[in-house]
Image 1: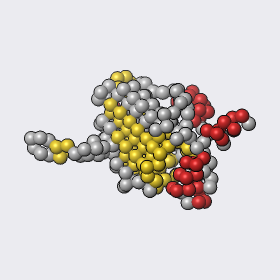
Image 2: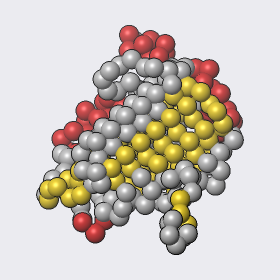
Image 3: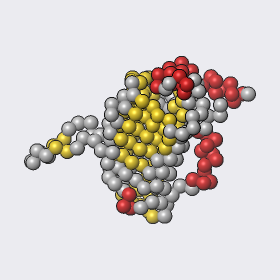
Image 4: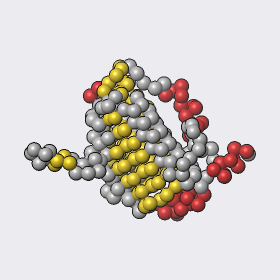
Length: 239
């Protein structure tokens, strides 16, 4: 009972109802599949949210407290003009900022996670595989934001590129994932790394790290099976 009361006071009910009623038909919105915690700014909710699979109450948590520190700065923001797709349950930590431009799509697999203070800028297509999570103070950006050219040939460089992160990727804190990044399943990315290319030819069960990131170690992966019960306990909203 005490846990239920704590959850009741932790949820931002105004933001929760506003979000669900805005992005879903009433038949789905009344089930409240998305719970929002803490302060958040909706700078745009003109896009689309798609829930693939069975729809449950509180299957998506935005602004959840599941890591240290437990306090929030109240800077969370969502700009949604493209498509936000959830392929199951998902978790966003505190102070997460996500921008999805018109025509772009951000897809999160089952149990995918954004850590606290993560920023996502999606202008084309970003995919998180199932159970893939990125640590606090990281950023995922599929665009250069500004046009660049070769000063000699005047060739224009692409301004955006698709990001595809495989399943069971354990991405540490303060990592930057740039446009054109692709990873295999079951990899680990070290803290303070910058990823900006296709790493799939390197295979799975590897440790990547550095600026730019390179393979550091083979036969290296997170022990997901032993950790899953704890992760589910920390991130699942028991409603």
